[in-house]
Image (cartoon, rainbow, N blue to C red; front, side, top):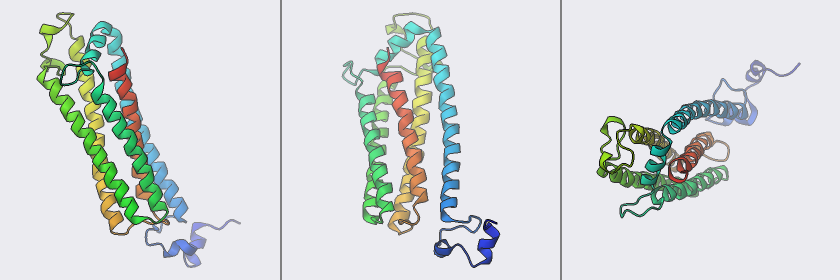
Length: 239
């Protein structure tokens, strides 16, 4: 007969796990606790993919309805503040997030190998890169607001549009602000989580035996980066 959770409790705990202050009593082992937490995070990620997946489908349907307007609207996103047609903002933010994914991986690896100072350092760098991403997005949004490239009923760029009296441009920017704005909210949440992890790491809460929160937030951050990898070509490259 295999040993049950009840049997383990009856014999004084879970061996080495019994001495781990992070071990919750309703899990038989730390490994089971970690796997359960990881499964919960993956379920959450599935809901995020469904959320953005619905928006991607909606964008595709509207692009089919307004093909010429969407192509022209794409070109406005490639303009920098000097009017040059280069996908500067999107490219820069893509590089920033890719580097932040690497620093996040290095932070988790540092925690796994008991390098507390390095873990804090990599977390802080990841936070700074996330802030750079939001600053670039702010500059881009400000430029669009100045040009009247706004969503829905707020769209005010008609005088320079090639196709007059269409809702296609306003629809494009409605999806643009909705999808990139929602992604930006996820980046803000990530900054909060990373800051919380940095404080706890500096306090000495994580080591090679317990770094589950770091691993889970790292997984969340990679998904945020992955979503941007899809948003970048959709809005800045495809024409």
